[in-house]
Amino acid sequence: MGAVQKISTSSPLFIIADNRCAQGRFPIFVQAMTAEKNRTVDDVFFAPLREAIELADTRECPGYPDQDHIMSGVFRTLEKIESGREWVQRAKPDFSIETSTVSRFFKAANSSRRTGSVEQVASQLARMADLSLNPGDDILAAHEELDGFLAYSTDGHSIKASSHENEIEGKVRAPSHIYSLDLRTHSLHHVALCEPQTGKKKEHEIATLKRIDANAMRMGAPKGRKVIHSYDPAIVDYRQWWLWKHTKGVYIITMEKANSAFVVRKERTWDRSDPRNDGVLSDQTIGCNAGYEMRRVVYEDPVTRKAYKFVTTEMTLPPGLIAFLYKLRWDIEKVFDQNKNALGEDKAWTKSEAGKRQQAFFICIAQSLFLIFERRIDRDEGITDEKSLKKRRSRLAKDVATARANGKTLSSLVSTCYRITKRSLQFLRWLRSCLRSKSLWGDSIEELRPLMAKYIS
Image (cartoon, rainbow, N blue to C red; front, side, top):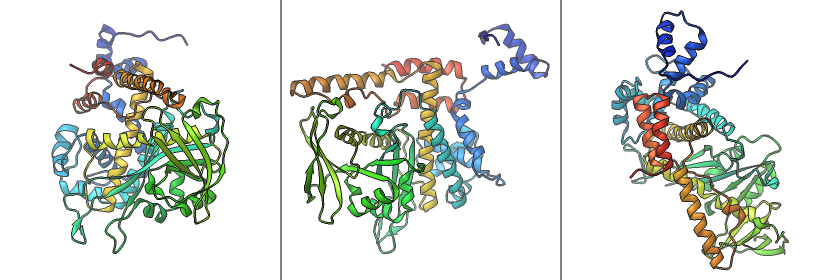
């Protein structure tokens, strides 16, 4: 079959096609061309979501189907909404979502069954986001030592309590969630809700991770794959690390606590000629009083000259890669900042466990939709966030110069990492406007180009 000639949407053929398609008398390929002309931004942005909903276990509940509730929750996440009542008031006129009443929306948000459906959609979209990764964008793929590893940045994240939150011992407590960000693909996953057990004011993250099914830390990895989590020191529990490593194939990288009392058992050797190990001061096998064997990598930042001590249960990777994986942990902090400040998800929607978990899944869904959409416009339209990449390159150039002035070399792992983590506000404003107005794809894409090239002035 020969190449298809592109025809301008202003061509008379399209005008004829519009009339004849309405009468059902025009060839299917012209109808497809007409549909392409009438394609909107929300058609493209929400196409993966609609597919994921079709694959999930949902119901056509009278008056308020699961599909409407899921679309409603995603829209509320994308918009900066102050309250549930504000969302319900805006949903129908602005987004054609039939939420009808406040009670209907919150009843669905607090439903355990619907929470299961939202979780299924979030999981399916995360898989779709992983598959959408453009060739060459996995910054860990170049390191053959990481073949067979899944790598995540995992952390707890607290937001303000809902307006109707129940008090615990006379005080309203902020809910806290644990999320994992895939360091290869940037898909976001909700791991657990930290729930205070009976008689407790709050639950610490490590207590939550020990309480839930240990398979949760495997992140759905198939048998034979190892999983690494870069986590802040809130994860410290050496016995739990041993259990995760030897029973689940899960490894931890974190910062050494100041009060740690380790015994050095062996000085390890590493390839000093490998540029990935630039900045490594030492690599040691260590032990603690409880008898568990671990590894400590000491790394000096060439820019700040500050030394960092990383503790891990992973014993095979080059030490520079251990330091780099922990540095990438900050990617999840940037996503948290985006969710709180750019999306306005800084307060719980409801006081119920189901409602809090649904909100977390909707946040993960939004992240997946962003990733799929950005990769599509990069691949199909040649649009990337050049202004943010320019800032990243400029910052790296300054770090290289500072390191050189310090007589040091910036690790090749860092100096070649140009990945952008957060969406710019210009992009989010454009997207929100397009979704509200259901604007046409072609015109909207041309409006986006200059917004991604530089900041408006």
